[in-house]
Image (cartoon, rainbow, N blue to C red; front, side):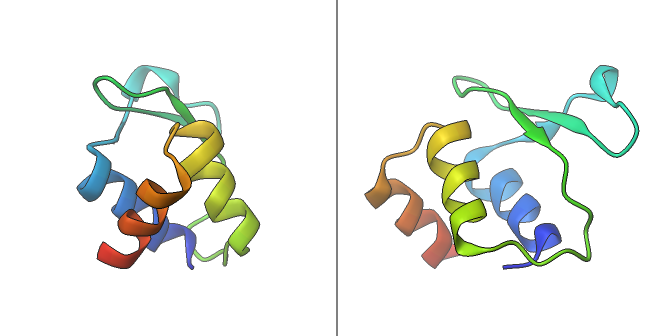
Length: 75
């Protein structure tokens, strides 16, 4: 999955948005009400490996495996 697509998926499906006060070069914090912050460090053109997609959704966003699968299928 491309990084741009993954970020759009986080924004649409989970309500994440960029916190404008936290930009540090190409790294930004994504925030969503009721969810943990995500440190976003991927360039838009980059292709994310499946393990990276899982890491963002499960470790950083705190989703279960089933929730993560549903989000990816919707995307």
